[in-house]
Structures are given as structure tokens and as C-alpha cells.
Length: 250
Image (cartoon, rainbow, N blue to C red; front, side):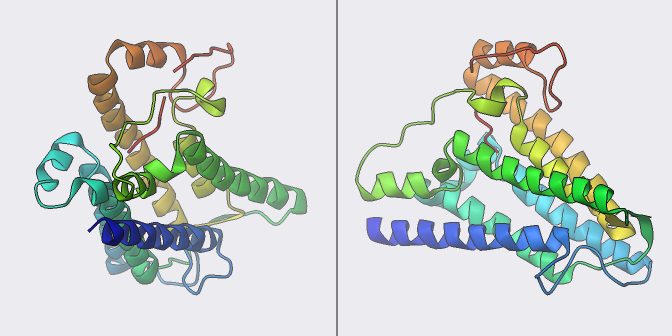
């Protein structure tokens, strides 16, 4: 059982990482066979399919992360592989989105100036780098389920990751989400499909932050409330506020 749990966790993580790499190409419109932008007609069915795909991911990713749902489904899913299963289902939701996304070739903006393109591609790369860095700063392997199955394999008790604010967490409470916003909005070619994706994911991020912070306040109490008062949510403050204690967990 312990060996199978470890292997399951590793497979789930590898599927996630492959999905993460595919997402870079899908959103950036290079290498991958399916892409966010492309030729396509503006149709109600195409918009509807895209909205449905985004909705499936949002519901799965958010509802399954809530403590109440975790308490429910760990009656059926072993606790050591709960996080890995969540990561696997999130990856499947994204893979489904990649496979069935409907490009809409209506151009909202097109930047052709080399300097402008370089700035936007730089913002795109910065966003993905910030996302990955943020996960490692708060324990990447716990966030994606590997730490849980490894501790179970070694027959060691699981302990929650300590509440800390390394690096960018001293500037904003959610650098991971800030990285996503850079990745979604920094593009020299913004089609209607890309705009729909960017608006929907931005709305989801703002809602998810509220849900996540509610859970963190319930779990961590005054410590997290103090952190929220000292550090801005997603945009760095010009006044230079700092804090000592946030893990971004969703």
C-alpha cells in the first residue's frame, strides 16, 4: 500500500508537470499542437464550449480545495494521496481544456513593434517564473502531493508546512496568482478567445483569493489577519510595507 501510494503520487506529479509545461506553450502559442489563439469563427457554440471548459476547471479547482470538501472525500480517498488526487483531477481538467478549446480569430490587439513584443514576452516569461518560484518558496513538493506520499512511504507523520513569508511573500500575499496574471495578459496577440480566457481566469483568481484567505484566517487566526493588514493582496505597495508570516495553498 505504501509503495503503491508513492508510485501514484509520483505519476500524478509527472502528469501535472507535463500539463504545466504544455500550458506554457498553449497560452504562449508555440510548440504545442493546440493553442489559445488561432483561426476560428466567432460562434455562440464556440464561446459556450470555452466558458464551459473554464467553468469545469474553476469549480473542480476551487470546490475540491475547500476544507469541508476535503473532510468529506477523505472518507473515500486515503489521506496520504488526497493531495495527489486533487492535483491529478486538476491536470485532467486542464488537459480537457487544451483538447477542446475553440480558438476565435477576432484580433483585439496586435503588437508588432519589436520592443513592445520583447516587453510582453518578457512579462509572459516573468509570470511563469514567478509562479514556479512561488511554489518552491512555500514547499513545491507539499503543494503537489509528493511530500505527503513520501512521508507515508517512510511511515512518518505528516506535519503542516509552517506559515512563513519568504521572498515575494513579503511584498504581496499571493505572488503565485500575480504570476498567473502576467502569464495570461502579457501577449503581443490578443484574440477574442484569449481575452475571454484572461478575463475568466482573472475573475476566478479574485474569487479564489477570497475563499482561500477565508480558510487561512479560520485555520491560522490572528496571525494571518495581521499578515493581511500588513501586506497587499496581489499588487505590491508603493509604501514598502513588509511582514513576517504566508503560504499560498489552494
